Length: 376
Image (tube, rainbow, N blue to C red; front, side, top):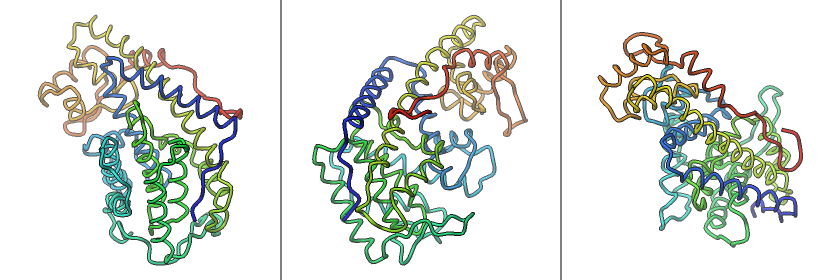
């Protein structure tokens, strides 16, 4: 027996309809001819990678998350956090590839393979294998056990049941709720020695990617939101799970939490599309005024939204040679649009005061209300 989705009440159905409307608006906005869409896509992917791994304590800078998303070398040292994020990138890239596979089916082998991709950097964590024995989630600060997983000999049976449920769509349960329940069941079964949280979030993204409709799968994940709201995420999991495996417990609060995450993430992405549109227009005006090549917009946009621009990143985005990229970046410094820091391979570029002011002028107010009526 697995945790079951709650029957949605009137308010929850209203929220589902509201989220569907927001995602439809987002899909429409992203279908318009926009030269900044690629920048938004990779930035969104990088934020998801960073968010999910930060929950487990693997913290990398926004710039290194972007480097991982683009398969580039990090600015910082290659510590375990970088390896974790880089491997998670491999698994998530595969998930996005599966989104439009017409022959796709869930399987335990698929989940084990995704787990191996994520944890291959440390073979002591038994990547790709079910855990062999007892497992518990501990609060290290309080030195207490918060949750005990089911017996190890139940893991294969429960995972087979989970796979069967994922391959059986009753047509009644909304994709967001199906994703939430897949996430919950995997993390409660705790089938692996390590990486269960990352795997559960990856599975939720996979379920959503398979049912995105017209919205690109990169924009369906709630991993960025979970990374920013880790305490609340852990709290609702604890309330839902209890102290040990008990799938008869009520899952309504968990479903509401995930719906809230979808609502707020969709609102955030819609806000970003509006801000990106305005930012591009103003920066493009500056570039034209200074009679600079339009390709330089790629570097300016990255710098404006807070990234450190490096030669490899810019030349890849603009599809130019390293020599041309170096010349472009120097020219942007000369015209007072970028600032250079460091030397040779360690050199990077950041937004000038002018570009920062332009970025600030495009920002919309922060904060998105809870669709269930609570404060932000």
